[in-house]
Amino acid sequence: MATAAVFFAHKLTRMSTRIITDGSTDRVIDAPRVVLPANERLFEERASRFEALAARHVMGDFLRLMGAIARGQQAALGARAAGALAQSALDASRQYGMPPLAAQSHARGAVWRADLRDILAAAAATHDAAARTAGLEELTLEAIADRVLLGATLDDDAAHVPFVGAALQVYFTRMAAQLNAADVGSCDVATVCPVCASRPVASVIRIGGVQANLRYLICSLCTTEWNMVRVKCSACESDKGVGYLALEAAENQTDGADRGAARGAATSAEICDECHSYLKVFAQDKDPQLDAVADDLASLALDVLVDEQGYSRSGPNLLFHPGSG
Image (cartoon, rainbow, N blue to C red; front, side, top):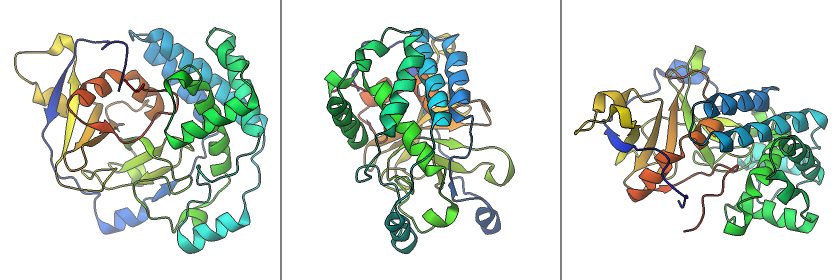
């Protein structure tokens, strides 16, 4: 991952690993395997989280821009109705476990570009960066959107990725919200979203009710959540060589690693020595207000240092182009 600088004086702490199961069989049955996006205030809450994080962050301007984008996403989400789902896709999902909104093959409607216009308008009110995307032709936008969904964005796309990625999130979240559990109940590929076949942005250890202490992967595109057992690689499904790395803030650093502090970290990177990948894990009991997308971007320093350890990130954040250098 190429970034202009490491923003904090941090070092990595390797966390000891204790095998954690998801509890009794009955409890797992009671907990939903897939949680479809149903929160009508999703992007408004994300915007508030970005703004709260920005207030005390060295990347405050960047996070405030992300907050403005999220405000635009909320406006776009409520401005339009979801398009009809193809019956053939629903049938294939129910019968064969195929994701009904597979992002790379779904024929997305032009409405996503209307969502983009709302997002650009919201961002342009306070940030000049939106103007660079506002003038792009439709064919160029569609090409960038294709690359975002493929995970193949170019360095030249970097300025446009947050806006295009945000519009695609609105479009696919709106579409996913009209599904029901029966539509995706047969999808059992644990490493990709059962709705749109996208990779997760991160995972969250939930609190409260039947989901307490369970890990849910969060789709980077349509916001669907799906349960995956803990201490298991979310990329290759190996339970061997899985470990955790966390940041030690400069003011807490000593000559040795503070493993006690690391075990209590709200944010860590789950690394896999089998496939050499990683994905962040956020502990909701440490911070109930966390948002996987917002907190992921606020912890880019962790990505930089884990990348330096030889691990490659397995899932994208669609509001950020990491660079190719």
